[in-house]
Length: 426
Image 1 (spheres, rainbow, N blue to C red):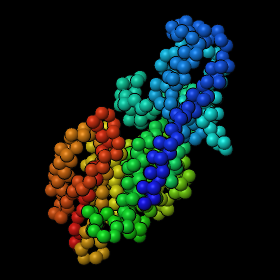
Image 2 (tube, rainbow, N blue to C red; image 1 turned 90 degrees about the vertical axis):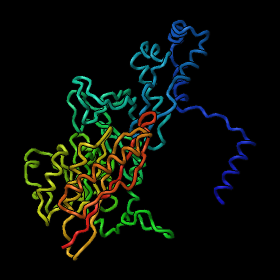
Image 3 (tube, helix red, strand yellow; image 1 turned 120 degrees about the vertical axis):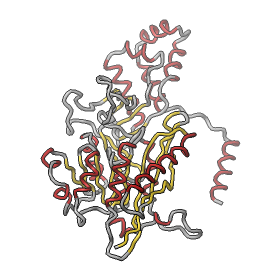
């Protein structure tokens, strides 16, 4: 009833009081800045662009200025291509350093909330799939195209954690922190983070749920683990930790690891980072046995993950409920390892028989017309691995396909949830 009344009220407002289109805050910053420039600059721009009046020049500049932005405190990030449409390039090349700085600070001042001034401005140029210098895969997903406009982002020649800019945002009440010059942030993952947070929600009243085995009580989760093979800055790590799971993570990029560490502390999770060659060379059971931290991060290639879990004895072996494989365009290279990690946790319980199970979350970019075909392929792949196992009761089911976000026209970022289970009998 409330929604209906509200909707009708808004419709009445739209009819009775036609809304006036609000001017963009960036436009509000640019207009007075343009008026402060010497008229000779705009006259020259008028001649070079073929505009008939100075007013037309200003209208073209304001009209082609960016209309969108994202705030990651204390930074404002403008979309790719900002200030690249004429007449902006012609104007910017003719400005002095101080005139440019006046423009950037005017934009920051206009966008800043009263009590938290924004101090840095940059243009997002995306994450290249290849490293430009070597044409090799950009495994660390370094944002080499980021274009800083205002503020110090850190030294590009000798970067260090203390001297670099660190920014933050909050999604689903969880804080994430990263250094934008060195690591990426994907806003579109918010939907998948929220889904994981609700994965083990209380069984709803009424009709029985489609997958009742998903509804695990907090006591079970608190004695279980999640494995994240592409941890990044903690995109999904923090969702698992909020559920009460302990999390073992693998991440190669030291900047991502540091962002994960800072984000974990900001969310009040305890965290241990294993990063030195000496520590990484030690037996896994010595690294995690007795560890009280909720999140443990291995700064190494995730190819070591299955071996590390296998090193653990029956008493130390973690009861794994989730393995996250969050890498695009496909995480398939680690699917067999993730399967082995999950199955290794199906140790015989104290009771005479019990069903044990857990989920693999497989991320991949898939054409929208190919999703069902890919689902069947994945089912066949896991059926084969189950049949090769010595456990005759082992089975896998691609029980859900989550379409997270569009990646390109007719291509979706998809997560395949594979539930693997075994009837353990002593």
